[in-house]
Image (cartoon, rainbow, N blue to C red; front, top):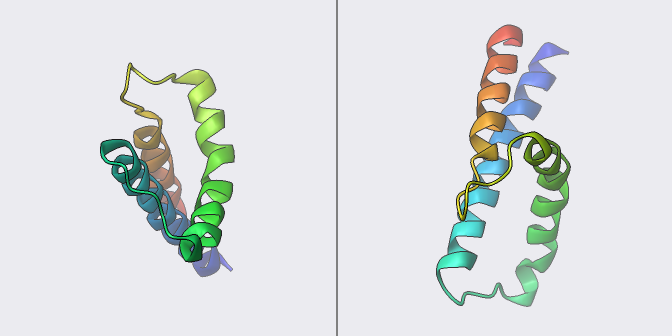
Length: 84
């Protein structure tokens, strides 16, 4: 059971990392994803938005820099360290 939780935390970490990379790519250029990727991007945003929104309530972005993912990565690492 715990190995499933550890796997889920690891997968979520990678999804969150993907979300961050996507936001950088979309912000830095005029890249718009092809229609075939829209469902994947929608899934990534749907999975990460609740946690990101919760953390942003307590740690707002600092100008153009959003540091809330750092705290999420830290929390995931602590939880993984305690369980795995």
